Image (tube, rainbow, N blue to C red; front, side, top):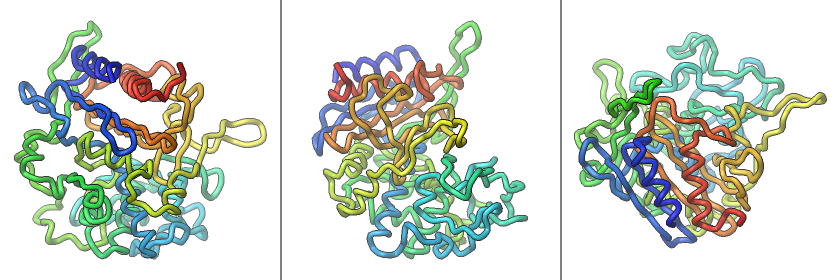
Length: 406
């Protein structure tokens, strides 16, 4: 615990972040938690209970929501997802090949982000995938694939498809389904795009920042990126076409609306409970579903003479993926030097926030952390495809938990 506390404190002291929070857990026990710095500049201290926009860690909650509908026989992981979308989804290069929820959860459906993946009341998700649609963007949302499917292409946009399928299958808005199927059973009060967040939690929530550092190393001021003055924000906080409101939203028409790819507001305490569900010590998922979650679905294979590489690793950040969860695989490209066991979870990076939720399903030990801002160009990592501050935080947490070889 000492190493993680010191690392987090040093990050804030060096002004690499305005604030940060972290938590270590084993089974259902909290081993340590702490927060340093501010949630709003200049003088509102960050709390362990402070909620922040946790970026792509949100995808884990999205996956869990969909898997609960799979358990209820509302969605089949291996059938055409089109039946739950309200429109036919097909890769233009492979019009006869169905795309399944499993492919989307594992980022092997050939979908990429293009220039936009924002959900707006008055627009539809279909408009991203239909030629001539409002957000078609010349088909840039489809990756060039060497084979029908199986090539890893990480996609935020694709999460909207999962959320839309949930709405069709579950008969409620995605944010409400996540509350009912995941957050309430876990005993946590977090929510997508501020949905369901209490007044007190909004008052304690964190703003996210970035700052410039010039070539001479001169520090710039922290600049608000998202969730400025969080207590004053509407809940839920959504984007609307001119003259429209939430009452104009047609259920199952735009799965991006509640930002299933990155819009979850959660504290490190909330993330720890989600991590416990991933490890299985909190029985959110049925045993068979949990086994599917843990199963390796994609592992990076480098190109060689006989075949091309089987995925885009984003500079080495992605080495393996499961059913909606990233896999940390011990080895040369692992962010944690000397990691002795594979971990599952997810990174988070957006609007200055850097974060992670990781758990070892065998020992059920894990950690979650986030910082509330970062420089516009954080220092790159020394041995992986992520930033140095991420490597430092993950190394310290894994060492404190005894998951690193002596």
